[in-house]
Image (cartoon, rainbow, N blue to C red):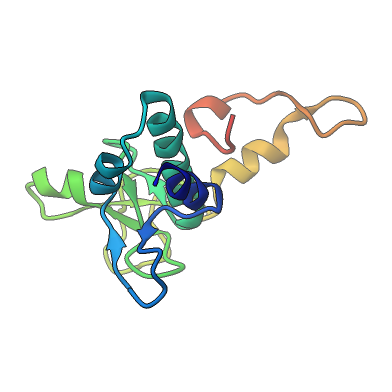
Length: 155
């Protein structure tokens, strides 16, 4: 079972489908973890891979600027995201924010333009990376101001 778990996450999966091809069930991780009797190091490794695989395959995810919960657009391609955690406590209904500028959504009638000044709707991590100083003749980033809080790439 341990080898099955490692194989699944190393193949980029974040779920554990039943290995029997005629079965369409997906096993819950907490049950898989229990049955596999994973040691702490292996469990930690699997859980790191699970998180990485989920996020990397979940293109369109962005962290809420308020609570850092991972959120997705309501519709594919929208720049407007809704945070379920912040919306739960919001007196005004939902908490929507802009994918690009990471500020609260201001234009209620639009799913593409947030209404915040100076927001062009493009991903700010791309601008940060494009403006980064590069070592001469190399693609290694030397200094990237404001990179850490944005987390544009895995470090």
